Length: 91
Image 1 (tube, rainbow, N blue to C red):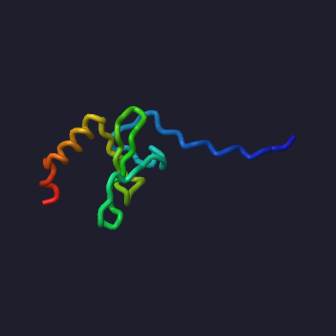
Image 2: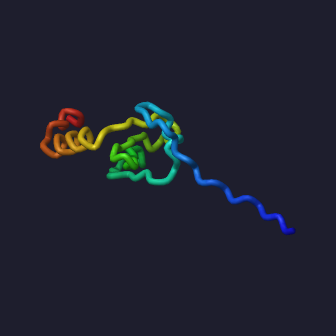
Image 3: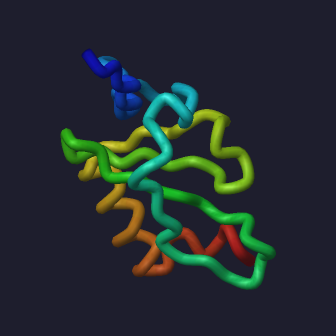
């Protein structure tokens, strides 16, 4: 009988996803940089979670904490930023 090596198992995402959890526990697949400027690659990465929430992490610290937002929270932030409500952050 020929023995075969077991296939590596895919990384299983945690059962409980919470704000501030180590981003590495969410896996390495599915992170995207929604925008990137001339800042040497230092930017945010975002991942849409299966339940509709959004995880955000710092691209230079992929093992650091993930901030978890509801879809409504992300929508309010993006719409507010488009309307200029976050301009004070860059002035």
